[in-house]
Image (cartoon, rainbow, N blue to C red):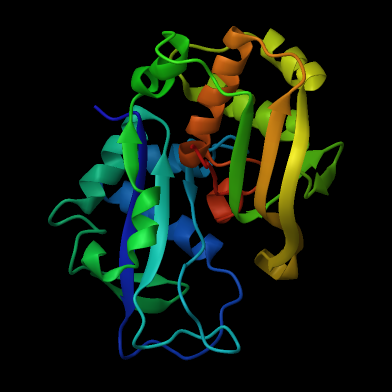
Length: 278
């Protein structure tokens, strides 16, 4: 059974869809995710709704080309990415994709009251396929923790959607190592079958540094006009004191990020991240 899952949906607006602009679809994709889970497991959907900040899933914004004011284009096929990092959530999501499930091909769904049809994945741009994957925790960690290969000294991470971190009651759109990997460590220890030692946080604080980056800020309007500023782009992290064991844990957290998301608001389309390996 999969413990880690990242899936894509191809969505085409139906003719009756309104041309009105939507600035951010994250809350709508969040609602669609919970609706899909509830179709097979209402209790699990309720638990996920009340999960607090450490949701064992993430969703993306609606991805694709929009009009000049952000309105849907009737000839476009859009994408939504849904992830899970707990076995029961993975299974419920896979059930929703099977024939008869809410997210199965040919089904009609709504995002922010706009109707879409679930289309074949082949209609999406090929570059999006790199986000599709599934794994379990042992296979995710084994390349480094079982000493099959040495962990790298540097890691480049892509922040694919606006990312921000809550620190001291403030939101910081900054990829500080303690914020990025500290948040991933917290998420890993909340769901993984084997927790990483708390001493890893000290290694992160003392030995990881932000090496290079190419980032820009992007503002997102959430519910009730709340403006959230996040960063998008990439950042490279390096170790000042290479230690094979600790960097194996860091590399594993970097691989975990594509399933968990990072920072605040991962259940609303923020914090989509992956390691640009190689």
